[in-house]
Image (tube, rainbow, N blue to C red; front, side):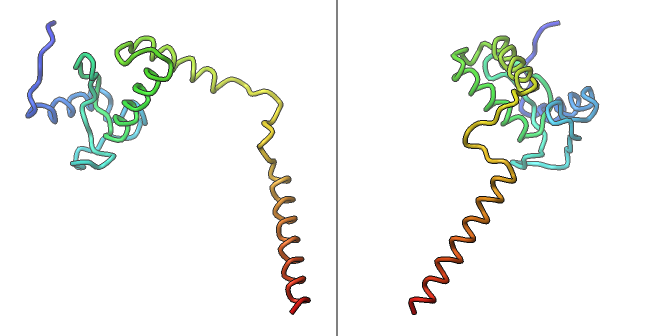
Length: 140
């Protein structure tokens, strides 16, 4: 099967066919695709495509499409993989997901405060504010 270029007028019809093939949901957020929304709405439907090869990948919400593009661009730059190395970017993202799902260590970072510590700090702040008000009233 040879690759064919679609026209601008075919974009909506292609997106509708892709949405049907995808079960009517966005593959990224898993929410229904609504073709009644038009324009720059974050939930309008677009044809996602690779900006390197031009190949269409699927139908996405406009917001999901933008997020996908920003993530791929960022990973390509930050990890030094390049924009066109989609396989390595996908591998990096899979490793990121695995890392984020890993059980954390039983240690807290030094700047993080527990709810009890936050409540104690808030009480101390209120106590100091009351003392300042009382001192000002005494001076008057």
